[in-house]
Length: 118
Image (cartoon, rainbow, N blue to C red; front, side, top):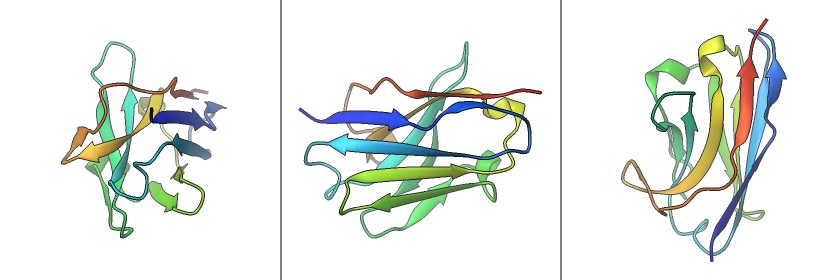
């Protein structure tokens, strides 16, 4: 069964940076596009950034210019470099494969908590 292991979150001040990692255990990484999602308290999970197997990337408007998604196909690992963090970026961040803009698999890893606060 495919597993997602997210890491790299933490507590930072506004304007600071974090780099998240997503290790994918299983055989989807080299076949499917991948995405980072996030879920803030009391809100629905939302898609933040995507990357295809051919390294075509896409971002939602509210992270463009601040976040950078990348993938290491040899390591089955995806990253999210987050700069100029804002309090509204506070959320649990998850990764998953993608089918269109929807999560590929109906389950998630434990996520990694990002808290941006002064």
